Image (cartoon, rainbow, N blue to C red; front, side):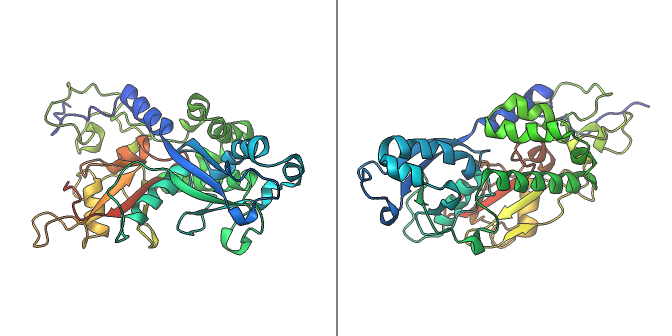
Length: 347
């Protein structure tokens, strides 16, 4: 039985392009300024050097940055007595506006959430790349608000929990994650800890959806006018067998949506809509936030906000399945941060 696709396959679903976008996501960094709370600086500290700047990987976590910060403080700021008395387990961070930072959030998500929260401040300056300014406290962590111990081990446990939850949403079970050997599960975390793309994806590829539309089908060359399209295996009447590990065949894409100073929204996000069309980011936003992302051809018309994924202003025609396979965080989640802006671009 022959099959003629209604649209050309996406140019972004080849193995090479998938690896490219995954690596671009992985290599993303954010600028961070860490300043020790001046009220907590030990005696004899060099108060002119209590600020430290670093470029942190988006996929990393605050507990993984602590050793680098500690080395700086030990070598430059604190004297020997203060350095010996330091206890990393008592450290905790606040943003420059006094908000307690979540240790179990990836650094990139913390940065993006700070960006969208700043977007609702009346005096917020125009968007520009600026350091995330953090205040480091050296004692008395508010354990009742941190939810988990601010340590690398606790962060690793939280990360593995997120991976398993994403696994369940995609496939309806956690067999892919629980089927990994302990050495492989540890390899996922070591890849993040050492910021080693190959080490992480050597294991993550076993649980993350592929983007190949259909391995047994040879599609025609992509059209220059159709770059975001449905894969042949998703169309009724396709002659090939669907890829059971494909991004367009998962039960739901793991997605969370973050609003400025608001709740975190989570819902089932199927890769395909009931009418057989692709589930796009524009449809997702129109459905869940119609007041600030009004559907096309409505009276309000103009979007009042913008979506950030991995720090990127993502176009509305981006497919949720593709985002889940190529721009999810290392924990498997697509984090959509919604910022408010009067002159937000239209999709």
